[in-house]
Image 1 (cartoon, rainbow, N blue to C red):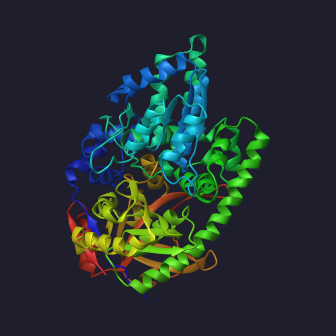
Image 2: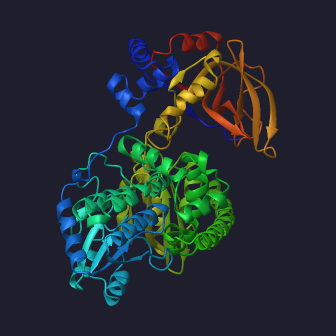
Length: 589
């Protein structure tokens, strides 16, 4: 049995800051601890976060006027405009937003989504040539092309103007395309972490302000506001940081999604069993996004785009069924690849980073499997699907390791690569895989200290049993939507005991009671069966998230176990309980 090593961190939490937030914001001690430990000890910062209203005007993009002028010129000239997207949720949603916006302004607009197997990631030379042949005069990229220097140059040489909108990291050599660029990081936008769909939304906002379409202006603006549902889908699915304006866009977009007028989204929620009235970030991440992604992973993303654009309810239902079936097929393919990849990992033994490759793997699923293996191993993982003399790969990383920087260090072994710190894609010659694997392992070995390879459990609040209940669960829900950069709060119960452990979900999960300070609360543990890390009745130091669980019309508070360890001693437990404001760092094995 593998024993996971992890580090428990309880950051400093000055009691005077907690008391100040409790008095001025009328919040509980637990919520005040969360806010302080997340850097919001100042009352104004904490209030602003709870209100979730941060927003910035499109004028925050430097160089936006050049982009608007180019779009205005082609709108006035009735030129053919092609929106070039990507095959994931973010790329499809960004494409839909700009296509809808340009249609509302009367543009002659079409789109192009690359085929993962045939075209690969991003803007390719072959695509540039095909678009020129079919009459495109303005090429607008979304979710790609900030690194496509040569491809954009080729498009311009063939008579096309180009506007690049993207959010990925630029090339390591610093070169960017010679074209107007709308990019949150490169253009100095206040929220550097916008996803591609949010960038498209901001561009559409600015475009409508400059070209209000006369009497249609109010209707056009209202229609754009409705597209916040697409922004929320993409923001959550692309796992960008849910902080700042991103959190505002996701929260507003989830509210729009609950009452969306798009037949495709209504059909997708019905097909995936999502109650529109209760749609949240979890429903997006685990139900809606996988189905939208399935088309681009296994076949072609045009079906997902059609679902978002169609106004025909019958067609929407048919496409939603197709996507659901594709998602089921994706799960089977993923299961097979994961089994084979785990076997490779076992053969390699413990490594600072893993490069796994095989024939017969589907390139559209390698990213998902890489994510699962990162969770399993706590190491960066790159999976490469080999076909003929080449391979396409997807990588995912841990918080401490910059994957894009790692690929840059190994660039001599690669044909092409791109992405960002946490996720990236690549193309490689079959003969270069072994050398790339050695180079990435060596780079990771030098870049990562031993302690960085330990999983970190960062505590947001230290609580006792008397604090755990519906009131606190509902209060913590004010911090949603949750995701990268804004995870669900982690609560430390330092004097817990577990009782009544019983299996659920065909033995994959467990239900049990947590007792602390003489109070009992209901809890679940997912994915580990009834192995909770401590025995029943044994003093435990345990971390949980707390949520409102809805089941058959009944709402109740529920603890979800994250990690548990036998308490080192009663004195240690008492110390952690009585001094939550003190910093601590423990390494647990």
